[in-house]
Length: 227
Image (cartoon, rainbow, N blue to C red; front, side, top):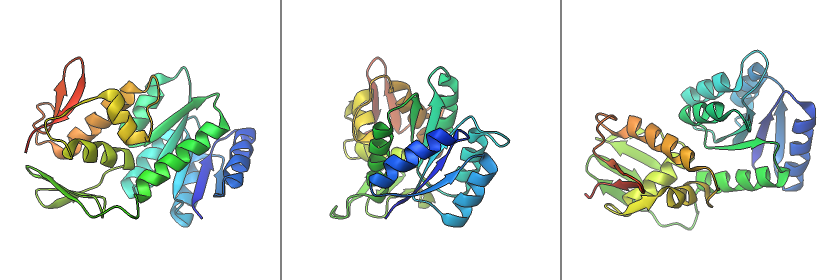
């Protein structure tokens, strides 16, 4: 049974999400501030964290930053609809997805399931090694190597890179990369892909300002250079 840590300073939101997640078959841990969230995450090692960005004391961006330094636990952010900059900052820090308030609890459960599917992978999937230049992606182990050195990827980054490395030279529209990353395309989330691409370039490119691997196709999307 997957364990989900729900972090929000609004008790009603925590309890509503807890009820829906438990009915969906998940075990739920809860926290109401950033420091408590870090303590529980370190002690209990949940399978996924739902994290509000506006928290008292240690806010959600700081919690996300610390968690990313310590692990690749999947993180879904809860953000206020008007605070687009917070959503982008959270994604740049390594969050995998975000849900804007007010939200449907059923949508949150669906997002949790989608992220966990990506994180755990398809158990029946055959081992696949993808190679493009200095990049080597082991899909069974969900591990990227750059010049032989392992590089940590978030679940969303892994899925985007896998899709592009499977088809070097193919141009992907943002919506297609969103579908690869999220399991389905969400209207209005194109900027999410731009942020994930920016993060990937920092991890794989010799000079992210002059990318050699993930190339921009202006007005369309992105492509992986041909091997």
